[in-house]
Image 1 (cartoon, rainbow, N blue to C red):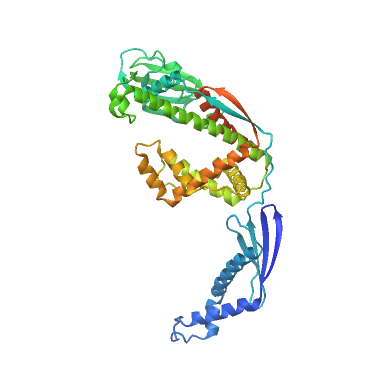
Image 2: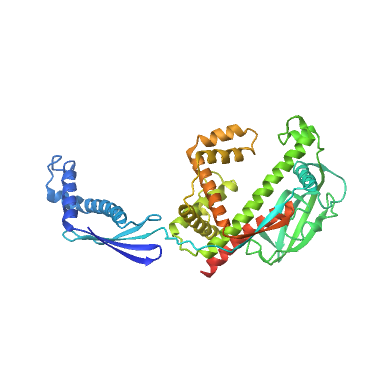
Length: 450
């Protein structure tokens, strides 16, 4: 077998492989002899069909089978001998495939990139310092009350915060448009869940009243055919309901797992959860800054096969998130919705893998168990969660990966200059969310300019 490897890009290799004709022809001949033992043809006994007849009828298909097997086997042997690390499956095509001639085929493959990590030394990183105050706790409890509120019908005009039950039909240029109508829709005024300007024009409306509302769709509206268009909605108001907040009593408190309904314990638990959420927001903000710096310093090529794998995973997550069902065919979701973010994730994953390798980072069983116990603390029966995770190798591997990623980020953080910045609880959460969204937008801009 002769092998030549051509570098066609930093991550693509073109491998040309030649196999002596004698090897292929002998293998085809042997396979035809085996086939002849079981051939049944009219006018011949089983196993007595002349080889010329067997070869004429079965020769092409047998040769295709043999050549396919040889190409796969020799491809594996070639990448092993050449120490190539494939990322995904190759495309394999035969250039020469004729009896009596050496078989020649070409395998085009992507490999994992060779990463030479550039330092992020001197990068500035902001670390929020967050103090969850009693006022923050009161605001959170008020939010919990609103989330568990009831609605009570009232005989008055609608105001901000009320729920209105409406029928509506939307028109553009006096023509109804698709998706612009509903019956019995319950809308909370001030929720900003409708087109800007729609909800405000329903304030002051009463049950039984007909309203005509004029709005303009935002220029960046998701339905491109409606973006920037002026629309009119004819609305029928059926019912006005006011929000009735639950009292902070034992029944309300026990909904959140505080047995006995003790208010002091409840407030302590709320504050504990908020502190955990704030710490997570801080960690995420710091981590995102480190990863952004790592990507900026290390522009690496990414195998398309890995991007596709990540894209497929994100599609499945999206289908699950939106409740599309296990039978939903995720291939219906366009790759374009996920590819840019998927590429960014793959880049970061490859870079972090190199950080872990270079620094010989490990995660012990004790560290894995400690992390699982930390995660389990958010559930009502922590020990049950711990037992479930520790008995599942796949889940343990996921936890191990998370620990190694944390260690890699911590290693990178040592190269940076960290400045502490005081933030409120809400500011910390908003900043972490904004930075995550900004990272996704920057990925999209990089893809657009590529």
